[in-house]
Structure formats: structure tokens, C-alpha cells
Length: 84
Image 1 (cartoon, rainbow, N blue to C red):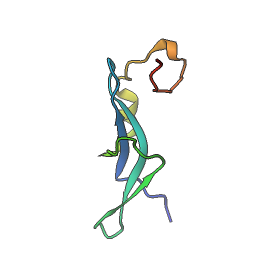
Image 2 (cartoon, helix red, strand yellow):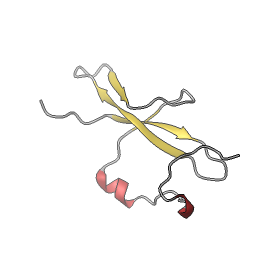
Image 3 (cartoon, rainbow, N blue to C red):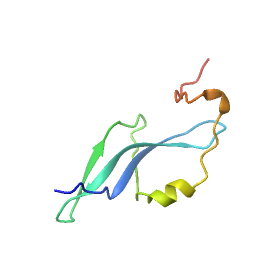
């Protein structure tokens, strides 16, 4: 059986003060063979309870998009917690 491509990508959107929202990919949705439903496979759960399903982007769309603003001081540190 060939690997099925997802019908949708699942995201949670993290609001960030003073910055663009951060869209975190947390899984995918796969259409049932009969076309009457989806299996949603998640690798993480959103803390706000909201999941956004979007059509998957093609490889060329992903490479041509402008990346979100990055903070050069972060050095790939993806910890989003606020420091008090």
C-alpha cells in the first residue's frame, strides 16, 4: 500500500505579543477511502484547544514564501515562554 498524502495539515496558532502569530504544525488529516470522513493524526495537542486545518502546500509554495520575522538573538531556541 502506497503512503497516503494528507488532505489537510493541522496547526495550532500561537499568539505572540509584538510579533507575527506562530503557526505550529501538529499533525495531519487523511480522508477515508469512502470519502465520508477523515482520520486526524496529531503529534501534539494545542493548549488553547483550537486546531486549524489547512490544505497542504506544495513543495514549491513552501520554498517561495517569505519566512516569518526571526529574532537573531534566539539561536534556534524555540522556547516561547515569557521570562519575568
